Image 1: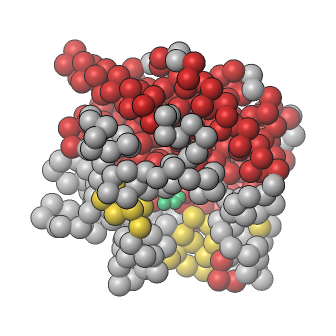
Image 2 (image 1 turned 135 degrees about the horizontal axis):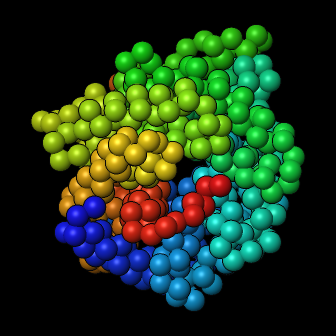
Length: 383
Ligand code: GLY
């Protein structure tokens, strides 16, 4: 990266760490919800599928600054993540990696926190209970085996590293075997011939046969929901990291190139790639942050020239986020990244509007992770 670019990233990284430290006053024993309202998160309980991102941000800021207040905040959170999985409080879904990697795997890796390790292993066991033999995938949501919920979702690629980590820590291959099976099923079904992706894909509960791709949070079944595509970018990079299957390099490049080719001029994705320059639909900045992290992860495994290409693209995305979306003044927001969208209703999906043109907590986390990756030799919390 150039000198100017490095200065820009360094300033943004300093600002983000300061904002996280300031936010610990408000969120010392509470968690931000998934999305802000009028750009401010209200403190609440550890219940959403997104609570781990807050603790992950705190760990990232602690790694940067060494500030004890950050470590203490993260450690309080880890105790609550242990309680949450023990009590099965809001854990009947697949998002165990999102919850337990940035919080508890991070705690174990960074400080040897055994409660974090135990909690993350319980979360991995919980996720294992959602594996469907018929179809070979982890069912994302809802009653296990029910026909109207018999589907995987692209986001779940990000929950697989928790299982590979569990195999590494316990020596038990069962976690990695199921993760490998799920990744294979997902890769066979969610990538379309034009390299866009389905958000979710249904299977027949009787036979396990693939049925159809359907959106949940995208504009329509056949469109490319920007965040789904971004989960595909990072998810395929992580799939390659663990499985070293060359087919996943190809998938990474296809899905990532689609993402990059469908960005508007200012590089902040609209919430669905059906929309581009000239549309007044909202953006989803979090998708750019996720995709940047995925490209930086994948650059570790690619030949030099390709690695340089995707690293430069990731740098361009982060520069755009700093320019267009980064919070610099705590009076404006208690988040880090403006212009995220959790869910936007459309005539073809069943979502209510939720967190539209707001901060979303994973957007903040992945923005901080991207800056960390650009400026430090960072050991990911995901595995
Ligand atoms: N994993 C759900 C979402 O990205 O909104």
